Length: 327
Image (tube, rainbow, N blue to C red; front, side, top):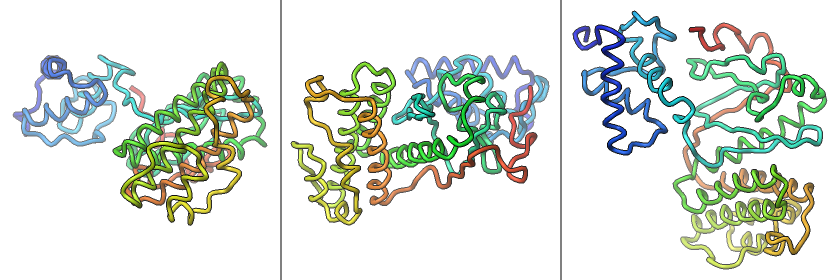
């Protein structure tokens, strides 16, 4: 193995540039290019590079086997930065914090994760990949949240924020589990579009319509799973529920179905929609999606989620182990 390792960092970077040139020629997508680069380098040199890297934040002269993964991913990250981020839907949620709406940037979670609500660690660099359960801060997911605003959030709001966060995470996880299902994939795009329309406030009726479409397509996905087909026309949610014994047995509340329902007139501004109505439609959509998609068997990426209404307890957080290493 020693003979297959690069002699200098410059030598490694030159070969990575060559691999990247091949990837560009193949029109290989930017998302995941770093991992593909690692894979191809491994194949070229008959190495089985590990992930996560056994050596974190290696020095430039550390070209050991354990440090290679970190060096390779660092090179691609330095070249492409945020463009390497995987693009998927749904990826955006909404939090109502004491009457103010904020966009929530939701990332994929594999396995388990633990979250805190902690203004004091708004800029803390949590370890992205960990051999223990990864830690994170809900407030860091809130788009454009300032330190002053984070500090001003009443502690009494933390429980409510966590409830909203939980519904977002559960609904998104269920949709990602069935992303190979065309109906669910389209519903996830509708959910993202509705969240953005609600945030801009220009077309609240359009936002409400998107949330209705999200629910409609997820209900039809269940009907298709159970019966082999689904109605191509008509989107009255109450009627769709009656077409599936699974949905009937799910005991969806009439209020949630009513809140998520929307006529086409709202989409074109013919029926006025208030912000509260659009927000209620969003909340109902999350609850329905999270509940009904659980009816289908599938391997979920997120297997556990623990969130604290405040800072992590001392025995649940190690500022050294749970932090990104300094470089």
